[in-house]
Image (cartoon, rainbow over all chains, first blue to last red):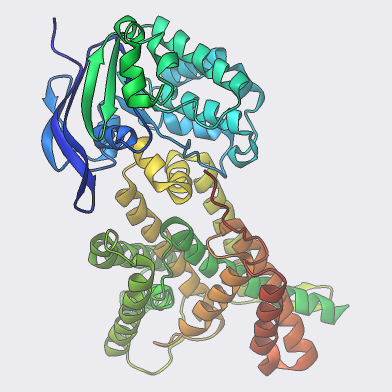
Amino acid sequence: MSDPLLSVCQVFAGYTGRDVLRDLSLDVHKGAFVSVIGPNGHGKSTLLKCISGLLRTGSGSIRFSGDDVTGLAAPAMAALGLVHVPQGDMLFADMTVQENLMMGAYLTSDRAVVRRRLDEVHAILPRLADRRQQLARTLSGGERRMVAIGRGLMAGGRLTMFDEPSLGLAPVIIDQIYDVMTRLRESGRTIVLVEENAMRAARQSDRMYLLDNGSMAWQGNGEEFLARPEVIRSYLGG
Amino acid sequence: MEVIVQVIASGLTLGAMYAVAAVGLALVYGALGMLNIAHGAILTFGGYAAFYVITSLGLPMVAGVAAAVAAGALLGLAIYVVLVHGMLSAPAFETNIFIATFGIGMALENVVLKLFGAYPAAQPLALDGAVAVFDVFIPVRNIAILVAGVLLMVATAWLLTRTQTGNAIRATAQNRAAAELMGVRVRWIYAQVLAISGALAGVSGIMVSSLTNLSPTMGGDPMLKAFIVCVVAGLGNVYGAMIAAIALGLVEATAQYLLGVRFGLATLLVLVILTLIWRPHGLFGRTQVQRL
């Protein structure tokens, strides 16, 4: 197998002296759809923040497309093509939908490329085309999530990480978000998905990591996961 | 009729002057959460920079304007390098930087005192003559201040909404971590915001001193008015500050005519109190609602 696109190796990290991640390792290969599942509060979002540079790692290393990127700040990681769609959307509330999307392509100077990506995003998330001139703060929860996803796609990154894109949404909207995830997977993008709903993630993942108390408790592919109900029961409470 | 024209003309002049000073203050507060008390001293420096270039070096007026802009922008950048860069990641940034800029402001004022002396000097960068409007003679310099003020407001609005830098400034102000995830180098944006704000203060220094005089303490009054404008508009609201500045300029001119010059500031302060009772976050301010 070729070298992984992203390789997290024995990382320890946390907030003000208290480690949330302990000896955590994870590999993501190009074109793969990787899910990180696990109970609430066990370090899934912390892991993504470490990778995208929002949070410093205590020890361990992170490699992205062959280069050591440990300790790089978020803007530098974004410049390397690593996209992080954060939990809670973190939209620019007083900017329009269109302006939010354009901020996603902040580092892309080629206007033709930006225009093409915008068309792609509008094709995948048609609602955003209708809401173009609306301020982000006036959108519904589902629409805000779509803006966050679309903004991430505008970067045209080499690896896109989604932090619980279905969190806090109505079931109907969750279905729509998962349709989007399926389309992204089929388009050959490299995706890391953090999710609490393990069954849902398992159905489309090439690789799954179960995070328990800051380290990886189990890994395998989606089918293996679905075939082992005891894994689900012991870590996720049935 | 003459009186109304007179009051409106002087109100608009005051308003345009306050707007230029207040917008710089609002920009910095909006982007960094930083109340820059040294803004008034930067303004003084801008006025004296124009004075020095024109009177001592004998250069044309355009060079004077350029000098004021450059001096203001450089001082803004210097405040970023010396103070903000190091304090930004420390706790209680907003309080610390407020105190620190207070000190820098005093130091700058004394530098001006040392360089140019305590005696007031006339601003050479001022237009002479007057234009008659409805039998009222309005000085050309007042019209120039109004025109320059409006142009600077339009330029600021254009910068914030139509340029890549402006989008990055707004994005950073609204959500710093998200802006970083988009690839925005936030610290560079902060440095630029302080430079832009300083440049506006520099121009505002010329405006203020062309109506009164140059003196080391001349920044105090416009700084206070700019702060009042920002509080009334809602701290950090740039467009609100533009509107509030014009409105307060008109109110002050009216109060000065109807009640006497010494009641101008008092009227403004009463208005601030009433505004804050009615709308604690300012006219255009919004309570920040935390959403999950």
